[in-house]
Image (tube, rainbow, N blue to C red):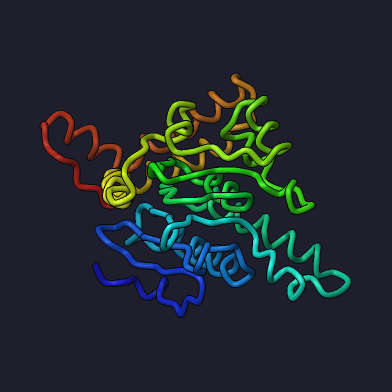
Length: 265
């Protein structure tokens, strides 16, 4: 599939391609894909563009090479934070990068191919569906370098005790344990991870784009609501999507025992 014009680079810290309605976004800052200012800016930019690019209906996010993202770019920290206002700007940029993933209108599959540490864990936790390779490791090592970070994002994935152990000791969790804990949908050999992620991406892309966008928007909105308020909101969104042409097509295709043809309206 031709790259939509809205998503063409140039990129300095990402590798972006589109296949079968799925945007494949690879973190690309060798050797460990540390999260630099350039990577944060480019990732936020491309996710916002993907949100408003109808040719793309799902995203697969992974890392180039043997690492997913080994955390913040500590080597470049001195260049980034030089004077008054630099730290708040950097903190805001970092927050918004993670929010860009969570708020991307299209579902994001995270394929954790190696180390996802600190900021890398926060990136993974901001995605919708997680897969891991058998070589994946997730952790919060900031305590070992005199920093903090990623704990609140980690709370979306890990239990109270495990998260605190990770943050207070730097414990890393491997792919098999991530699967045992129910944090990832599957743990697969490294050479099949992207195949599995793309298969899931294509499945997501095959659904009604309107329903998919509204479903993710609804899940984000109700995540911290009460049961009563959250379910009421979900019912209202269900009523709204039921009036669309795509919903009518889905119901008719079910009756006709055929694959639906969605038009995004």
